[in-house]
Length: 335
Picture 1 (tube, one colour):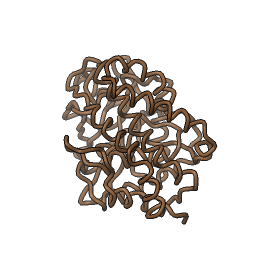
Picture 2 (cartoon, helix red, strand yellow; picture 1 turned 30 degrees about the horizontal axis):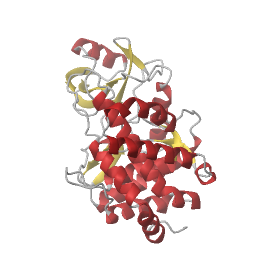
Picture 3 (cartoon, helix red, strand yellow; picture 1 turned 30 degrees about the vertical axis):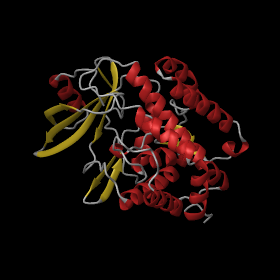
Picture 4 (tube, helix red, strand yellow; picture 1 turned 45 degrees about the horizontal axis):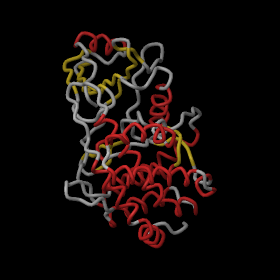
């Protein structure tokens, strides 16, 4: 959510008019994240104030974006609280700003909870399962663009920036994940559209209630288990600089039990959760290394610290056997 493309007030105002969203009153760049240009836009229509988010896409193409935008629209129409994209008079939800693809979506109520407890993790687990079930009938298909093929392409690019122990870890984990991906158990994992980036700052709460998920621009068709693993690796760990990456057991079990109460996991999912937790940590360690060492110029850019997910990955490798036993016995019994 850095600002790479400076959008003029007049240009944003004209776009809002084409979407019948009223008169623009405020345009404010959003700090945080690194992929796209994002602005909060406030408008007034018939005396009522509305808040939206304008996104200008810096990496995704006009050809790739319909999947993300139509997925959000599809989920919103089925009662999942996600921000549906605004359409113009012709029904188009993908727009153009300064020659780049853009979208405008409603801003969810509330704020992100960056220090979640058991209750917040339960709410996320429940909503994630509901979202997976709702998305099963989504007709469009697009792979997770930050999945295993991207890891295989990107690790050689970041390796020169790593110390020897880091390089050994990233190479060995990549080899392990390629091995897992060829296994019959992995082939048995249920798949469908997933968020793939459901961190704490991509969900909103108001008065303790989960009001929705947003920022679907890493979504793709992949295993549901990978989505669960990404959530566990962010929602259920400590985030201070001294943490060792370990999962917090009460929050982890709360998220998993809530998810399982809506969509029970199959035997392959129960067996492979420790491996997919490692996969989720590897994916974000790679991307943070890439963003840190091969950055793009942007206003408000603040790259995330890669060492956080290095520690998470080391903890998942270290604790794989204990996690498998604990989660199978406490949370993942067949329904």
